[in-house]
Length: 151
Image (cartoon, rainbow, N blue to C red; front, side, top):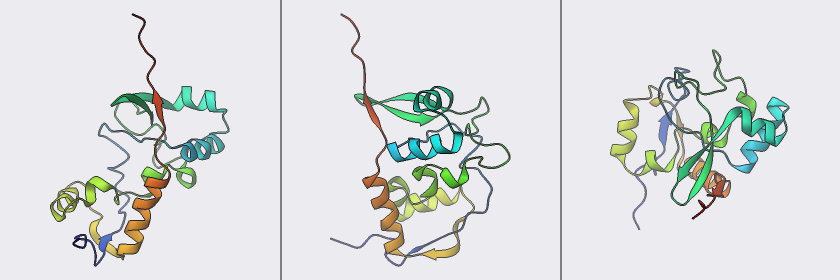
């Protein structure tokens, strides 16, 4: 099996442009650990946290829990910056080291057009990148079963 294109590492440094948090529609899918951290940050019960900050998104045969967005597509926790930064979801922590961005050199290059931090700053090693990928595999988003419609 050949080595991934990022075997020598990839450069990335967040420029704090916040484009990944704002202005475009998207999903921030939450794992159980994410929900627990965010419940701590917001000091809400699970029921209240889910009702106030989350939505269910149909994916395949199930539903995934995602953070809501504001009408302008900013993350629900965006207010001039991330209001839950120390407790932010793993999806946010691991950006841009996500499977779809690492499928090929072309995918990484395409991301560079949307994120000014790609290709800049610190060189992240193969081991570090793979640890982010492993963390996402080990702490997957919650998938709920869809309720069956009455016949």
